[in-house]
Length: 391
Length: 106
Ligand SMILES: [Zn+2]
Image (tube, rainbow over all chains, first blue to last red; front, side, top):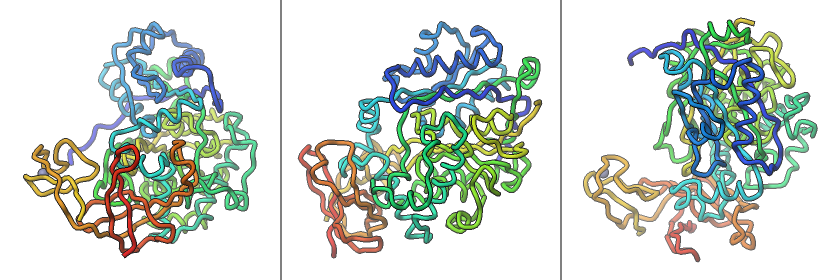
């Protein structure tokens, strides 16, 4: 394989979260525009200085990033649209970083935002994809719950995982959410008994295995390190980043994702290994996907996440801090913004800008993404390793 | 036997239906009759549905089946089916005209 260019000189800065709301009467551009306003306020940049815009949303109809430029009176020379949901954060970051390195843009605003109301979710699920309409929706219209119930059941069968193993993830993330005012479920304590006693949704999935849809936005800026330094912005550098789509497509039920295919390159590019990562922010649409990412990103071998979950602590003050803001399982799933959450929380941890509790001495963070159930698994995967710098 | 889309150029079977062959990209595709047996890989009991038309039928039992012909499908299952069970699948049209797969115990 030819070696991949590194991400030298690129800074990631200004983690922004527009506070989530269970339902919203506002349209998606309000959420995205509010994030942009906050990016400008916190960076001291003028709107005219943002010459790159990468955006994602599930609730803008046929509009994409270019429609947002008119909405906000912007004339960027570089735009990107990322219709890849849970993988959109890592993908936006990778693309924005290359735009900075090539000189195609000076400052890129990366923003994900979605509204939520009872109609928006059912509309989204009903017309999500052609393959899903043929091969998943006719079976009780279970949405992603049904797909990930089958993935979870298969994982439990093959690797001996129990409901309590997945409960350890949900319970740790709920504890992590305490102190994060943006976590919609952060003030509702959850213990293992409560997790196990929850009503079934799509067995083996029960209520606390499923995310709660909500409205919200997540955003960050990408620029050169010199620019970030001149603005006095705490920032992170990109040690390594990967993405892979439709990996292992012959597997009849997903037990692994694209991270596994490229993780050696990720750690080689970063010049470090999993043991040197201070906190891990993974996409958590369902606990089994957290387990899968911990395996595929090298924190344990395939099938050994149950053992890991029995012996290590995923809490902010634990020996393997994971989803330190509570993740989507405790914050809510703000549409595509859920795909930005791992990147934004990673950036918060290593630049000392957390909403809730901070991992002591967090310096290196891994963020990963997983998006788009076109049929029976998510197709888009990515991961990035960030290091805090210039505080 | 069940009908599954197959490629006349390379022999690939595919599901869901595609406009070209997933393997060789030929558009010379026909429905071929293939063996209808397979193995259940995973089962789920659904207690929630996103569509009102299923509400009165809950709970529903669905499964992922790995068919001996080489495709894998989500299908309706029986309440007592479990991973590892050998099954036969049949296709039929649901009330909306959509083709659905149903697993039967062997
Ligand atoms: Zn072919």
